[in-house]
Length: 451
Image 1 (tube, one colour):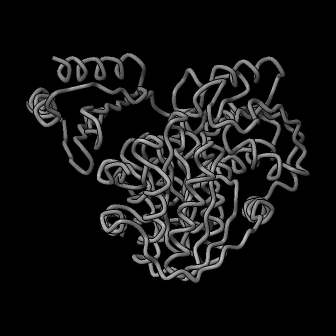
Image 2 (image 1 turned 30 degrees about the vertical axis):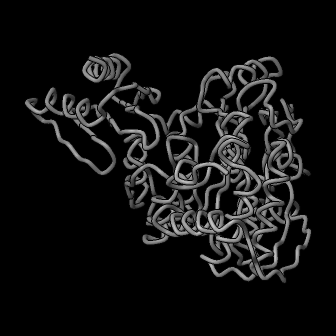
């Protein structure tokens, strides 16, 4: 049994197995999940990590001990779990550590309808109840629940295909890098019957990630995909993270595409179906996104970083779509949940509906130059942030806001500096009208932070 405070994060549970997260802990969390949510039936899915099967089984024992039935969906992506929760109207748990290394595992939890459970919406109560169960010496439950096995992959694929019209697309050459993660399980079924010539990279399910980390936000993890796109003359490349809830796009030139650009593209497609609708973007997303949304008659809504904030804002505003800089994409028609696969289908539809190459299509959705997210280790996050504020406070035409960290905006540029919740880091994102201006702002902020 590990320290539950350490492994229960703001949005999920994540820790090293078995030092921080073991079967005893998972069993207690299963019992606590039922007690806190009042679930009579819950759905459970898991990724390909070696520890996922025993942890999911332990969670199930805990849930059953409290009288709940459990539907086991088996192997699945996180968005398959959201599909299960939404379509069945049940709370659910996904066992995954997403893009984290093999020694990690974790749980993503939701209420019925894929409503997320975070620190402010039940996760703390589940943690505290699980801790009490462990302290008392174990479950001591009443029993009575039943376990059912159910394959939901085909239903998941059919549901996604029903949300995006791919009936008239031209033949496409597509390279997919699944990173030995769950994309290797879901992509073949979702793409089945489409006019796609698929080149599959690392579709073998392997939680040790023998080829590269399943984290496409890191440029090094895109190298194999970029090379394959050029080698086979593909129209597009797609990279999924470990639990396949995020999708990264590479164009036909082998160039990485910013998630902000994909957000703008999908927003335009959704606004064509839902004129005047709200579109969510987090504060790290390019300023080009709200500009394009406004020009298309939509209503841009800016939020903090993090899926729980975005999902809550989407539910409150009725937004049809939302995008994050991290390649998470959220859809009203998918229970306000995120799905990398659904975003990929939108991009494939946009590409296949006409003859232009992807780079030409996306050029109209790219307006600014952005830095990558840059982390700096600092002893005092607040003091470093204050030094940056003081540096820019005396300049003309500069504004500040603190929706999430510190955002400073000037003529043609902006940057955001926000602290990590779990590490002594400050995360910098900067954007400007061109590379020279962006680099100047980026380097100035880093010099102050790291001084």
